[in-house]
Amino acid sequence: MWADEDWRNLSQGAQHLYLLLLTHSTLNYAGVAEWRPRRLAAMTAGKTADDIKHDAAELAAGLFIVVDEETEEVLVRSFVKHDGLMKQPRLVVSMTLAFASVASSRIRQVIAFEVQKLREKQPDLRAWDVAQAQTVLAFSGRSAAEFALGFAHGFTPNVDQDLGLRTTTATATKNKSSSSEVADATPRPEVLELLDLLDAEIERNGGKKPSRTKKNVDAARLLLDRDQHTVEQVAAAIRWAQGDEFWRSNILSMSKLREKYDQLRLAAKRKPGVPTPTAVKQPPAVTVDESRRRREEAAERARLATPDFLKGAAHVA
Image 1: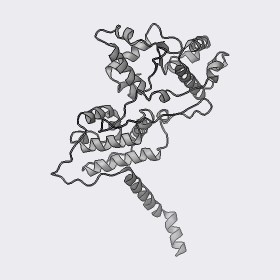
Image 2: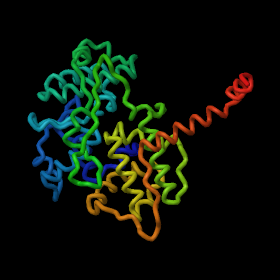
Image 3: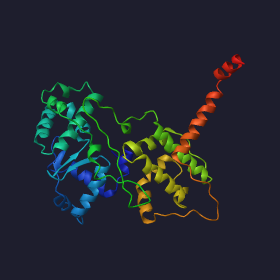
Image 4: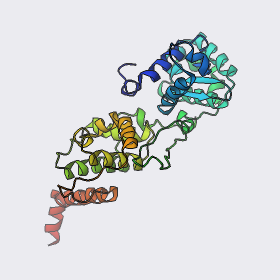
């Protein structure tokens, strides 16, 4: 747990709530516990129900939990796949009984999604031989990301802007592993565009563009896939950070941008407008479209310089 970057990026309150839920007396074998903020708050001195709800919002946005206010239930999303339940047939039966007792439809859908995803990754587990497990596998599964809309926080220097959230649709029959869980995923165009934009903005400020390491590529991808920010929100964060005198010297890589994203968002809310210093004439900011054009031009130059192309040109001549 402590080796996980997303876990370590949580606030103290969110981490405390997560551990409280994991050890709560009402937690069943499906990873579902009672959701009663006032009672949960009463278990820690100085905590209020609002504190619990605030911490829960952070956990839900990070896809650590799924809350259903209507049924007063909360799911610890990764409980089933990480607690070793599916390796023990007897506990699989207990899990399916707990699954059947869950009142929330959305929580049952997320549990089913996690179990179905686990079967794809570990098809040889003995759990799949248990007859009761077929009930969960046949249930309509949905990703927790689809229910995180109400909890997620976007980034924008304009606090009044509508903060959209990209959602993911997944089913048991068409379940592709999300990019947040594929370490060596091929960079997508929007990921490369964000990396290019940060490079250009850093160079515009007189800095040295960061190396295109796996860590930085992964950070750009995870900002979109796991953190559920849009391309526009991340681009806004890049431009805001590079326009701020303090942050431009501290955000010099995509991995650092992701690490400090929430702090940047809060800083932007406190001072939404950062004037460009008049003493230094700044060139115009590089847009995402411009960064794409530059990348395509660079690729074309590289193609023209290949030996095969030059041989072909000489032959034609």
